[in-house]
Image 1 (tube, rainbow, N blue to C red):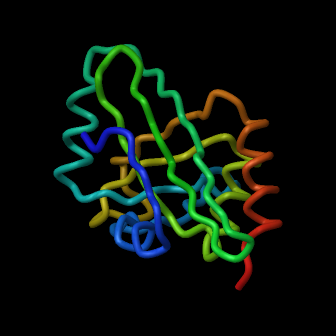
Image 2 (image 1 turned 135 degrees about the vertical axis):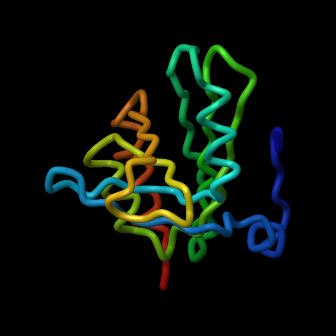
Image 3 (image 1 turned 45 degrees about the vertical axis):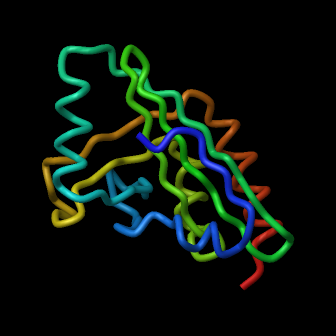
Amino acid sequence: MQGKRKFQTLKDFIENLHKEGTGLLNYDGNNVPCIYVDSKRYENIISSMYGKKLAVDTLLNIFHDGTHVFVDIQMKFLDSNREEYFLVFANEMLEFFEALSKTGLIAIVPQMEYYGNQNIFVIQIPKIESAEKAFEIIKSNAKK
């Protein structure tokens, strides 16, 4: 896996952005933020969790300069050595982080499959207060 990542310049952030995209899914009238991954990565995540405790420690590592806000969404799957990282440009994703702060849920979805797909892996973040605080930091530092 990618391990601990370091970003030094704006170029480093831009070059390491998550390329498959993000979005919002409507689930029982609530927007749930989702991260799209290619089908192979999705299958790899799901198969590596089979038969193991489904606990995921999620960290939102926020980087900002007063104009640009990047969030490295880090997921450590407990009872395994699996870690997943998704670097996103938060300036263009305020609704994503607002939904995360309200629901405490984040979904991983195969990229080629969208709304209505049965292949959705939903993670409940351990502390919704962290998502609420992250949203406030993002909102106050993101300039369009």
